[in-house]
Length: 209
Image (cartoon, rainbow, N blue to C red; front, side, top):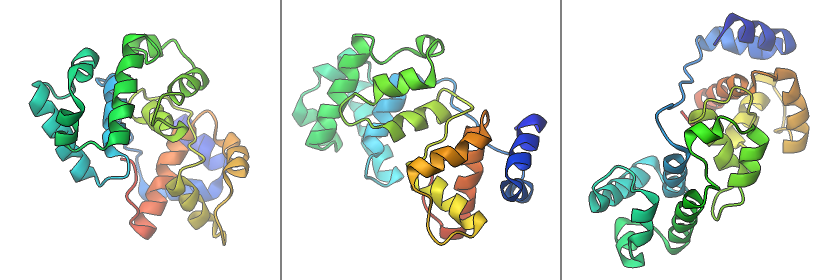
């Protein structure tokens, strides 16, 4: 985190600034080697599962294909039975196939192509995929593409962290939280990371890392 980001977040929200001083350096390091396609395949596997279970499923998929993440055409060539054998449910199989198809037709961009697209465009394009919602795309923007100004207002942990540090009786609603978050721009991803840390420490909620 730059000094400018720290100064800005502290100025607009001194309570958040106190959290930043307490937690220390922001360790948000995006995986700049991962393609959006691979991030979405991983996201589908992790939906509604513990991380270890999801990684085991992805490991079995990789073992079948001989690659950590199968290419889209390879994935499409696998039978439903094979994918079920890896541990994917029927709904997840449909989501995987849609991600693969939309990668082949260019809807899911390469990392290089995504660099020329705005956050809003990527959210609109990718959240239209089967099984992929806005939150999933926002996680891709933050943790894969390294976008600095994403504020996932639907995320329980971010809202809970804000509630805790500000001593609120209830979490702000997403629409109101989006307005609150406008003050954190253009460093909303960093603000979200610190709010995750506040919720994580207080409630031990499994949060994005």
